Length: 249
Length: 217
Image 1 (cartoon, each protein chain N blue to C red):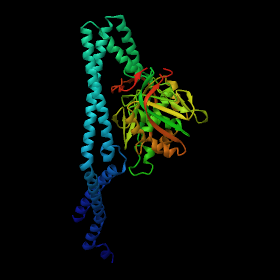
Image 2 (image 1 turned 180 degrees about the horizontal axis):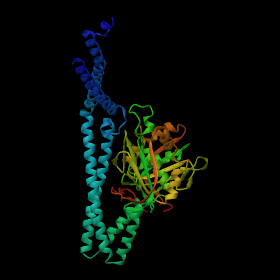
Image 3 (image 1 turned 180 degrees about the vertical axis):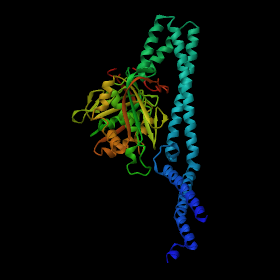
């Protein structure tokens, strides 16, 4: 009896092995199909429309970087000519001084100083189809709210991912892409703020400020961090001045 | 022997399964922000925006090349670069909002409930549409301006209390700014949905005069 029970039945054993492999094999097939279909869905649209459009956007961004470099070079050349001329006459020297003051006020000069760094980032845990996705990612209005709070706190100069914030700066959102000064930017957004540290930190700590961002940080995991920082470098504005219509009175 | 071969096969399948589960999870479940994932409509808008910016940069490069050449010639002929410097000062005074400004543009009249965050959004939208100088109720918006909620539903601009109804004036190309604000799905339409009892009126103005920014820190 015991001997009969212990003897392995080869047919039954093969059947068990086959069943053991059946479920993983079915799952394997399902996942391969899902993966393949996912790729197909993305690529059929992407190849026809998105791929060339994305290439065009990247090409234009590269062209913009080149144009900005040319503009900076020409501004430096003009500065040099004016600086040389300033050594030759008192009137030119006065104008040179006034130019330097205005450039600093307008954000056309780089600045280094103590201040505050703010980092804003998408949540790294949110799922693509999640109902709360909108709450867990950065929006252009979050950036404008942060800028508003920083200026209110007495900021002297601000840059977002090295884009200097000036009088013409707009934070523009198309789909999930954010542009600052017409330049494509991706999160994390590092906002460098030069200004009186206690006053700027006080503005960010004020519970009545940035309520929405703070709530989303606490609940949805939105990245939002404010830290005191020293010797922050804020670059000069490198875009076009775009003063074409307005004239001084 | 057979049992060992089956075990190896099962392990290999399990390994592939693990890899695929991870790949599938990473490629589909975790949210990622990428230009490739934008819709063709969004990409077209982005491209239009980038093209506009690049055209502005090209215009300024062309203008600046002429100015550099003029300044070089003036210095070489012993006249100095005073004219060129004065021209740049005039431009910077507008850009830094330290001088009053005039020119064509648009006026946005807002009569009813409105708030500081909406005013900040409107200012941002006008800047994106190319506004060169902006004021709210005759107070100039500067490069470091900020808004806050004031008492009794008023709006503070750089600490100054502005009572409604508000008039936002912006100097720039009036046709472009008017379309940018009033287009279908634009900010005026959004405001009309959020503030249904508030009256918004956007008009093109052939001549606006805006004051200089009140304070410079």
